[in-house]
Length: 284
Image 1 (cartoon, rainbow, N blue to C red):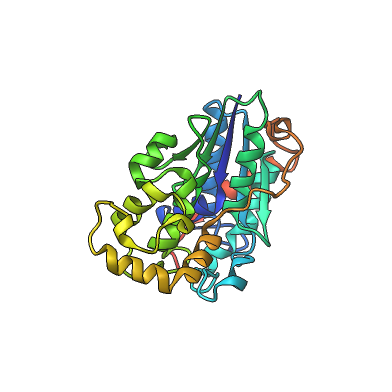
Image 2: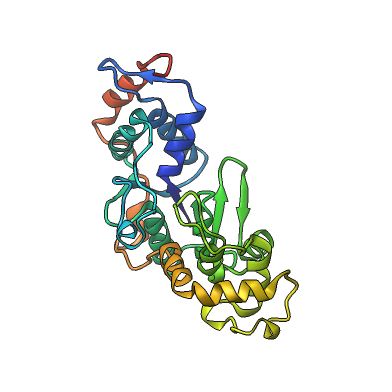
């Protein structure tokens, strides 16, 4: 049994900017939601039997209380933002499990679901469908993997190490140092991808990095300056790691049988027909 966990927020953004505009009879923009729906149904047609989609029903989360610069819904196109609830509605009508997140983020839901699903011995593989580097922390061996559906690249644990230079366990520490512009936190000055990977590959977590750079013995430039920066901004680095660490204690389902697709609901045909009838239009 394979479990597919889909990042609905990423998919909605991707389809919004990839597809031409289309509006239904009420004038609502629906192209992105329609595209995601077709994509997920395509996965089922291709053989996926157990599938769930996580969305950011509200863009803001508890992380906004921890860091004022954390991502918000500000600046998102209104026609895109309005399609989140539409997407949740059409997916549910199609019989697909949807987790609309409010306090937590879609990424947290994907992480929590991956851990819960992998605990079931009947599950052969959990496939997290997103390119978001945050989710690399959830990859475990070849049992929990990360799939970029656009590039069709799958990362297992060895793939994460090859891509980032660190193990999945170090991904939150890595992001704390290099920052994540998509999520709105900058990392530490001077700490780039190569230096962060070199140091964390040896010490794994921030707390284990010696304050004296002479003890590092890693292939990284300006280690003295890096050590000084980390010493001065250790608290900030730990905060950024908290932002980057996904929450896996969220209860989303009782067992993986609840993720099985059993067909669409009676409401789906009429809703699908309405989406299909949406007319192309120049984007406003």
